[in-house]
Amino acid sequence: MSRSVETLFRPFTFNGLTLPNRIVMAPMTRSQSPNGIPGPNVAEYYRRRAENECGLIITEGTTINTPVATGDANVPQFWGEESLKGWKHVVDTVHAAGGKIMPQIWHVGMTRVAGKATNHDLPSHGPSGLVKPGSKKSEPMTTKEIKDTIKAFGEAARDAREIGMDGVELHGAHGYLIDQFFWAGTNERTDEYGGDMVGRTRFAVEVIEEVRKQAGDDFPLILRFSQWKQQDYTAKLANTPEELGAFLKPLSDAGVDMFHCSQRRFWEPEFEGSDLNLAGWTKKLTGKPTTTVGSVSLSGEFIGSFMGEASEATGIDNLLVRMEADEFDMVAVGRALLVDPAWSRKVHEGNFSELMPFKPEALATLS
View: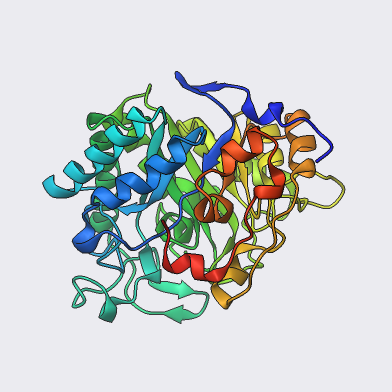
């Protein structure tokens, strides 16, 4: 390391929430909440990161209260007395350790495999019943199903506020339900929820408005989005800065406080002719704070992790250069924090030789 890490450890405030530094724990699915209920082990998992200087924790994806929101009974839900009681214990534990925490609320959409999921007799939901372009699995969502789903997102945000969460993140990335409305490849609707790029933002806009209605304008709201999809890593919502700006404007206007801009490798420029990454362009175009993410302090990107590939620990000079230039405001760290709860503290203390490589077997422990 040749640069000071102090740029990572400046406080940051957005919509009334002050964070002690610029490090975010990225949401990572764990499937360790039997029957959707987070237990004491979940609280301890997040406590270990909070007490080691992680500025903000965004939880693993937690599902909203619709019959087909999840494809895994061991993924935590964000509804029901027992689940919310479990999450209240998580919140209290993280706060006692000096941390800040938000749930990522989620609907998996057409990525749900109905036969393997809870309520397996019900078809999965998506704007056009498409898992990916040309792969139809069910009928399009009805208007009533859309409205019920929007309301459920708002209820989850309201519950997050009531149990003491510090804000909420909407999962609008990676080919899940909100993103399926964004993507022309999975949204062929001709009603008010389809159409051109701006028209396809309407579902998300109404979700954001419902969150504001039920949780309040002063409750911090993050939207995670991505160009790539798990169904197609090369997919693009926007091919130019102008298209990206048109896509982001209605979302920003609806009430997003911060955009969490998912890339597989944070250092890759988003468009030709500029070094700005997706978070950099998003901040420039909207004026809103942004979070970057993607293989921070690791040599390989995360898709390889699921194929058995390891990643070596690396330095973060490139990240620091970009942060010093205010290209983005926050940095989300995934696998590096997964394998090492003390990652943030080690970086702050300059102990880069102690940073741990990522090994795929870590996915089986997620401690």
